[in-house]
Image (cartoon, rainbow, N blue to C red):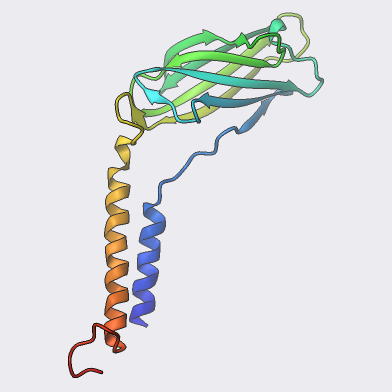
Amino acid sequence: MKKALLYGLALCLVLVALPQTAAAHVLKENNGVAVVLHIAPDDNPMAGQDTTLELSFGSDNGAFSLAHCNCMLAVRQSGRQLSQTSIQPVGNAATEGRATVHFPFMSVYDVVVSGTATDGSFAAFRLDYEVRVARASGSNGIASGSGLAVLLMGATSILLLGMLAYTYIRRGGRYAKKGQK
């Protein structure tokens, strides 16, 4: 019974320590306009550098076009607006847009995509995305906030290996104490 409890505790520690990933390319919709947000590169923005946000638009009635949209992208943090920029069409695509933003430091930001039609072809919309910036410029891709997760995973691994070795020894395995076999 004690072993099962220990194994369960170790499994819980491993699950808690595993890094939580955010879902990329989430489709959001408001007032008949749908938007998918992609962050280049690899949905992993870096603090202290310009970041390209790519947006794919669509609408219920199929009438959405960036050429007829006063579309804006705002970056907010802790209820305060840090920047706002217009969304520019990508090439000749009527539904593909791009904006460049700057996340000053590692944190969680709200990215707000909003727009109004210049020709009345679609209703005004506003979509909020939560963007986690977990690495800084010069960190070689290693998230600075991941130290605790690595420490917990290491400690849990050592605990599991110790429990396995203890069980093996108790059952008279190769490393059993003399006189136990």
